Length: 79
Image (tube, rainbow, N blue to C red; front, side):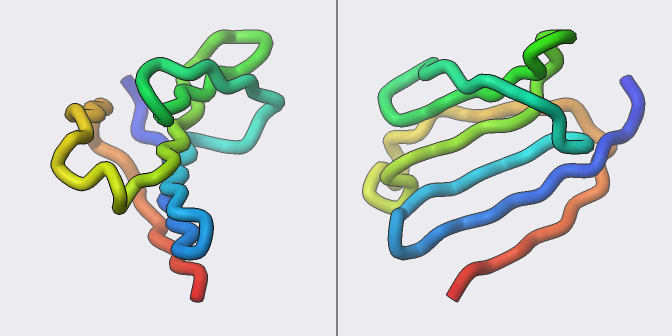
C-alpha cells in the first residue's frame, strides 16, 4: 500500500472527529457502528475516512479504528 496523506479534524462544539484519507474525492458515508461512519470513494470504493459523532462523550467505549501505515499526517484544530 502506498503512503497517503490524511487529515484529522475535531469540532469541539459538535463533538465530531473527522479523519480524511488521501486527496478529497466524491464520497459517501455509511454508518458502521453507533455514531461511526466510514467514507468511501463513490467510483473506486476506496476508504476515504471516518466521522465519529459524540467522540468525547463515547470515551473508552470506542472500538479500535485501524489503518495501514506509513501515512503523512496534518492535524488541525478548530477553536
